[in-house]
Amino acid sequence: MISKLFERMYMPRIAAVGVLGIFLLISVIVGGLINSKGTGTVTYTVKQGQSVMEVAMSLKDADIIRSSAVFIGYGVITGQAWSIKPGVYRLMQPVSITSLYQILTEGPHRQVSVVIPEGSNKYEIDDILTNAGITPSGSFVEYVDKQQWEGYLFPDTYFLFTDSTAEDVAKKLFATFHEKTSSVLPESPEQVKKIITIASMLEKEVITKTDQKLVAGVIYKRLKAAMPLQIDATVCYAKRMALTAPGDWKGCYPLSSLDFKIKSPYNTYLYRDVPPGPIGNPGLSAILSATSPTASEYWFYLTDPETNRTIFSRDFDEHVANRRKYLQ
Image (cartoon, rainbow, N blue to C red; front, side, top):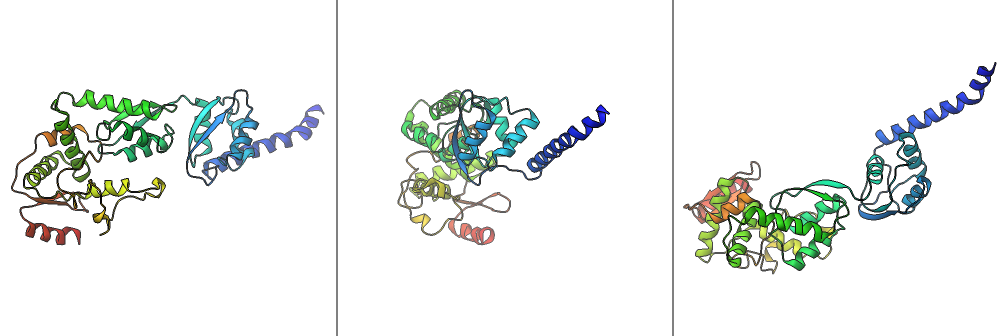
């Protein structure tokens, strides 16, 4: 009798909770993101002693999540609702509810693995750090500009903390550069600057070490002959520098006729000699190629867009023919 009464009173509630749990889990797994439609990085603070309900309401008010009820329900069902840690978080939107709980339960002092690809410039590194929730957008570029460290931030895999400052990260990359290159670079700061600038162009222009050494030889030949380098990657850098609203950057290519007229010392179509500084941060292979170029009979080169193979030319007529063959 008692068991029947229990079933009659509580089983519908238990079933309802079970159905709600299944619904919430399906909505997260199938529906994907339970968040706002916002994009970019947002700073969010969990205060000491806040309940999951208070956190959910503040997340909703900050437009980070769409539904406070779903956030609470998912946290209760998974048991994570009581493990949220206080602190200041940098959240990259949009963020899934599972990722959001993972971040909030691990705490603001989280170590993340960040890959800085070879050739990345300060703007690209800034985006990588922002997307990883490490530094606010623009702060890395601001610090690197102040120190004039573009080119001297070694590309590698780093383990960084999410509450690091732009200064912390930049100093780590800068120290790694000196650790990796001190034995292969000359002592003269001017020579080092020229080598790193050329290496940064090689990194953006060609892929293989063999081609990098050949292109380095072409660059030194053209410099000696007082010919403009006419390297597209330098135009891209000038184009990015000229952008007043970083959020408007949609990538460099295709380059327009107006791009080649940008009045910047980084534009190697308008200005002879190497740019006034590196256009990115080269890896060791490109640096070694810039220190030991391969001499050849080539004066021109281009990249086949289909294969990424570097096509070399001995004279301008051959270069024009290659342009027709590979780029049109």
